[in-house]
Each structure stands twice: as structure tokens, then as C-alpha cells.
Length: 237
Image 1 (spheres, helix red, strand yellow):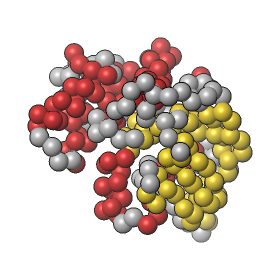
Image 2: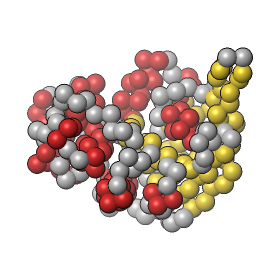
Image 3: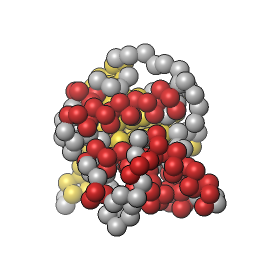
Image 4: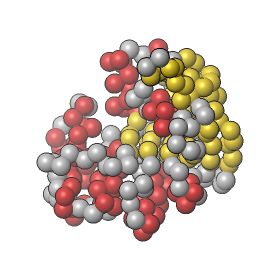
């Protein structure tokens, strides 16, 4: 079953007197529980597509259904609520708050939800344990390596148990060893927790961890290929 369904998805904006179209009529289905890599040269539209799927930006035309909701029909407040419950975002440069500990950074998405302090603690502890950073919960970002910072960012992305994880060049600022560990962790989120992952990358080594590669160029999908078959998740969230 498709978790994400795009039809005629288009995004344009004005730059001076010019009209720029980073995405031009894209049709794309992404199955629930799959790991998809969006690839293409700079300016190909891959990050624009990721941000539309995540509800961070709005399309100019077309339809976009994600997790049973047509995003083009949602108000700004409805979209914010949908995003808080549906999407975890992993950034290239981590986007951690430097004055907060790892524990407090992971807690941030939960502050948008109802729930007791005890329930927040349970979820945060579980997320930090999953990324193997339970013993670093009281460390600040400056006290962590780049790979550890990205693992905190992944814990923050999954702590509210969203069905969809999107990642924009999640290994772009890491050495090869740390990058491999992060990609293995992302793969586990799909195989063990059943998450759907959509990742922007320009790195073929990172793309090798995905099940499906979608190549974009000049705002259009030029090629889509399945590189490995989907496996059933071993356990649900």
C-alpha cells in the first residue's frame, strides 16, 4: 500500500522577474515500509520533493497524499498538527539546540503532544537506547562527535513514533565510518520498526542502503529502479 502518492506535483516560485520550477509535474508512489533514495544533481528538485512530502513546503499544483491525508487541502494549523504526528525529519547538519542536552533535544517533539512527564521519559529513554546513546543522555552537542550528534537527531525524529522518516543528506557531514553507522541505523528503523524512509543523497554509497532509487533531473523523475525487494518488518513500533 502506498504511504505517499504524488500526482502532477509541481512547485514554482518567483526569482526577480523569472519563474523557477524546481519540480514539474511529478507522479510518484512510495510504498509503506520502504526505504527510498532520491538522487540527482544540484537543482534537480530532490530536496524540493522531500520538503513537500514532509509538509514543510506546499506545492503550486498537483495532489499529494501522505498517510491518508491530502496535504494540499490542509490549513496551516492542520498541516502543523499532521506534521507533528506523521513525520520525523533528519537534517544534514543535525539542527540540535546547543544549550540543551541530548535528552532535552530528543524531548522537543514530545512537547507538542499531550502526555505525562513519565510517558515522555519512557519514550526518550527508548529512543536514545535504540540509537545506542543512553549513556550520553546528559551530554550537550559540543560534547558529542558528529556521528553521535546525528544519532541524537535520529532519536529526536523517531521519539513521537511517526510512520514516515525523511532525511536530507543525513551523512553529508560525516566521515565514512560514522556515515556507515548512520545508514545502518536508518535501515534498522525500516526493518525493525516498519518506518517508511525517504532520503535525499548524492552519495552512491548511501544510496546502496535504500531499496529503491528515484533519479530526478530538472524537476522531473528520469528513472526509478528497485535495487532490493522489501522485507516484512520484524516488529511493529
